[in-house]
Image 1 (cartoon, one colour):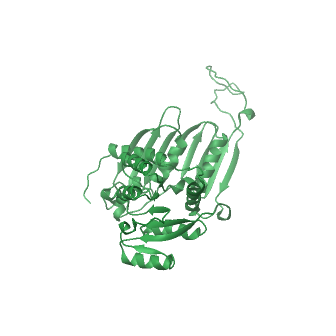
Image 2 (cartoon, one colour):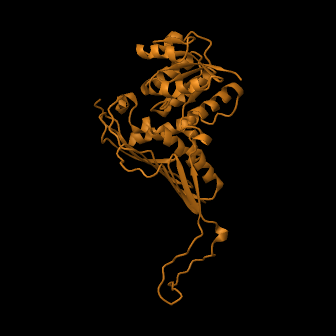
Image 3 (tube, helix red, strand yellow):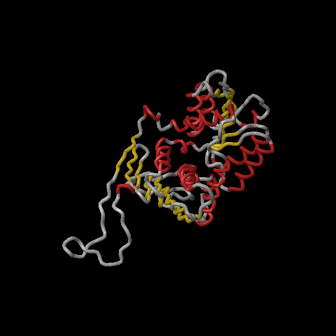
Length: 357
């Protein structure tokens, strides 16, 4: 098995706790060869965490002359993603950029073209595609037991007050660009082919920055389910992550548990439209009602079977390693992410907010 030599730009929450931790968990596939961070204390910790063979830099431009790096992970602050990724691609590096890759779809298209022009790989980190609950939800939908999917409600909500740099528009902050790439990526997978119509409402409520912390997003299109997505920091009660309505049943899910029920047409009494008033067996006026035979099923998250919640990061990197080393299918593509950013960009266009931070 080929081991990829990796450089990680940034040792913040994402660079260390997500990407760095994933590298250390897969030593047969990845070797962290270089770390970049402008903060001295983080560089010192990296020199200990990753072993004596690590090279540590203050600025990523110090490593641009290297020809032994197979993949650069760009986990710098969000507003630096486009500029740094473009520079790396132009210098011949394959790049995995953390989310949000950009705030403008034109920038994503530019990065895709830059990668093609320099014959290098350009990838975007969307690990929630591999979450165990989402994999199971897709399996249930694809099985057809719920019938035609009419509405998908997604609730990536909680209650919090926030005051860090990710609440600032100039840094590509706000709930839609911080958290949004996860549920919007999932939503677009369930929506399917084509670009949906978009209606979005945003608000600033408990944030100390100038970006939104409340998002209500509706996606729809001909022959598609309505997708109702909330990304709110103002919801004290959050009973579900997913709620799905279908023509033959429904589903309710958290990250740890899925309940769904459905009926079978071959077990129902045949019915036909009646325009005459309905009566019961006593000749009294009656309500239109039938008793369906429901089949109820449950799925629960088992760490022993599905791995830890962070295992979706490992699954993403397994996919990426297989693509780079063996040419296997890339299941999260930059083109898919470009469509995601198009949706996010339209949401911001509909909800302009003044900047003061």
